Length: 279
Ligand code: SF4
Image (cartoon, rainbow, N blue to C red; front, side, top):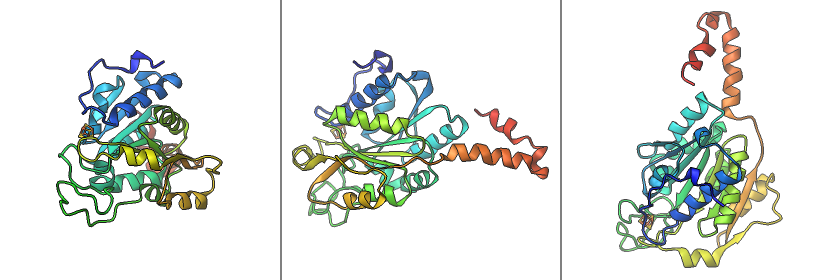
């Protein structure tokens, strides 16, 4: 049972059959299961069809400019580490214009939870090829077939140092909900790439249903095994690829500020007090 408290009451405006509906349902169900307080959640969205998530989630919300959802979320989490900070971003938003932010947030292990709505096409701009569009696919910008190789997003996250790396499929709401719950409970940076069919511009639903399988009996602390799974191409594993707990960026920052405050030259500046004014 999903708590109505996370619902703004606005009717979602996505196309019929869009995978965004299921991602929204999974997020609300995860919040409900974890008994989170809406006032302690911040959702940040980028630009794309996914961007409407912040209209439909009754939590603190910020709709950022294209590719900049992650730096906004990093700012929020840094000044107030007690908040649950969720980033909704699309494949165009996260893997194209915003890619460097994703990699560095992963490397720094900032305790934000990044949910990528990966429909493998630029949908809001009506169907152009993007960084995850498979080779050979015909789109409005590639009428003779896409001649570029797509990113391997799981490999990208693993190589960047992400401490929680998962893939979900929007058609399996229960499974996705469990992944989101694990991500929220994770101490540091969490990344979930969600395969999300876009029936209007690139409908992969039937292919995904045939290829997707759930990861079972996989040691999530085994980095090499995670790399091997990320390289799988015939079938598509979903679930947690990698999960290890390390000190989060904001925790390290807190101790760094304390250390800096004790340095004679900085002691008069009272850094803690200064930063407290922004939290
Ligand atoms: S264009 Fe695609 S991604 Fe956008 S709302 Fe429609 S189905 Fe969903």
